[in-house]
Length: 109
View 1 (cartoon, rainbow, N blue to C red):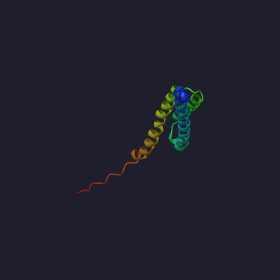
View 2 (view 1 turned 180 degrees about the vertical axis):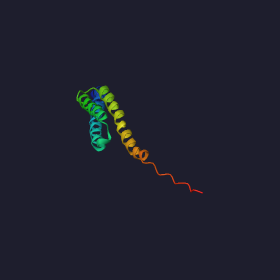
View 3 (view 1 turned 45 degrees about the vertical axis):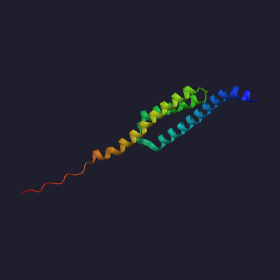
View 4 (view 1 turned 90 degrees about the horizontal axis):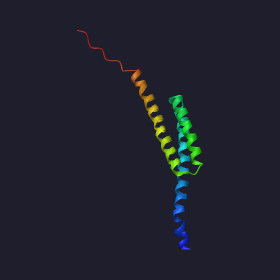
């Protein structure tokens, strides 16, 4: 019995790694969908479409049981998601640039 356990240990580890990657991929897809919803119109339509395509691709890959493809698609989506943060940060900074503080007038002599 111990020999059988050792024999299948590597196979069990591969299955465990695959399931964990699938779970992480699904969680990332959910997070990405939530981030898009929260960002609303602060994200350009092009970026929104790009992220939606990557979410769809990740979900497809996660169902195919290919660990390496899941990891690659997850990294790709994660990298693209960072663009949402940049877009939101830039949106917060823009009003400051558009509405500068009035300069105090110098007294006239």
